[in-house]
Image (cartoon, rainbow, N blue to C red; front, side, top):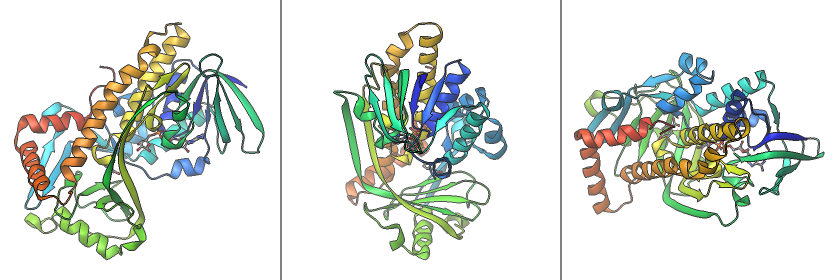
Length: 388
Ligand code: APR
Ligand code: PHB
């Protein structure tokens, strides 16, 4: 089998890349180790930057987003006794959209199917070969048949546990592991807020997000290794009510049936370079951010926007310049988002150290009261243009 771009991974990075390449007249084959149902149902984050929405719309992926997503002007910053709204539109002219990654994934799968994109699900033993000269991928298809896929380029969009990351020789890795995790719940109850609430509290961080007018998504800071089954539903709602300021200025948190519980560890990870020979990494294969800045999905989208433009230029105009600059260009945004995600995480999660707590509160007061401080957060959260 032969194609122009062999894409490993059918997450948002891999599927969007195949979509953007097809728009540019470049063929690809997508290989995915999980089933289509599993990939479509995975619960992940739900905030889209202004630039991500613009990009998705520009390639025909905006209809359901606009119809079913929710445009938000900004977020609330909360700490005991105080809640402040940061209006990103006033501060930067840019809004954000609440639209679950699961929905983006569904739109991508539907669009790729409609376009007749070749996606091979449930493949195993994926291995990359000869990435410097004549690259090819070997794998076993869902029936156990061995396959060799020749390609001019391999795109590693296989996340943090796939083979592509390790295929970059002498890569440099930067990592920060945080001493706490997020306990995330989905609940069949109308959100108790019109925009996301990021809350600092001595008991730990909390976030009130949502998926729709009837489904809420909420998170609590918990110690690493917490078993999601070890908290009763009442304990979860009590902790959320305390940390989010239930009763403050008459605001109420409305509990409801919890339909999903999970605990996710928090870390920042960056690998460089994001390209070696004919192998290009994008998304979680190259970097991981803690979810506090809502950057994971948006960074994957920005990576493949840059990569597709570079590969279309390489294949269609025989111009390698953008491809040669891909890693350096993408890394600028990667570190900007890595810094912002680290900054939000360390500003909002308690360490138990009273000195840290006073520093965090002082920073929150500054961000909420200074136009310069608020604009800094807004600019990063709403997202910078992809093509700078
Ligand atoms: N062969 C084929 N596919 C693989 C392999 C393999 N050996 N290993 C992993 N994969 C697949 C995974 O099953 C997954 O579907 O690669 C895909 C990687 O997708 P994601 O993990 O969603 O990563 P990415 O597309 O980069 O999207 C990043 O997803 O995890 C969130 O917070 C993250 O929002 C960010 C976004
Ligand atoms: C979510 O809706 O799941 C979400 C929103 C904002 C974040 C992280 C997660 O920062």
